[in-house]
Length: 108
Image (cartoon, rainbow, N blue to C red; front, side, top):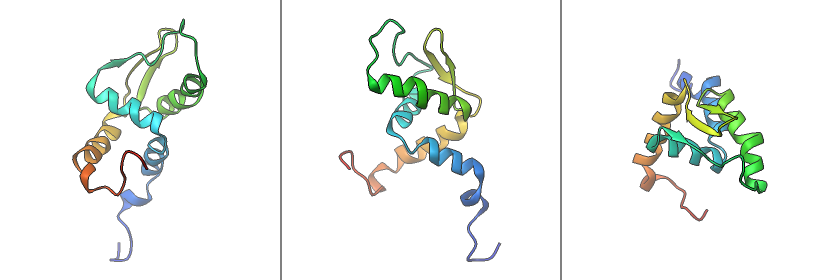
């Protein structure tokens, strides 16, 4: 690696997957909530689902599960940390610890 070449972490497919997963607010919130709680129930099957819930069920939870960041029981609606959660948790902690240094605010 030369001085002009980025470290491997910048060009890895794992980093691409992580950035894709973290690109949507709904997924970031689920992953962050799992830092605090071992088990989540984003919605109950009997709840009337709105468009946000439908998107969560059909897009966001499957993507998080495919990446290995969550284990999702579709029958109960339960979401828990998946086998690759440590990978994303490290990044979430980094963001949380340096939030005041980031160039974003809650309203952007």
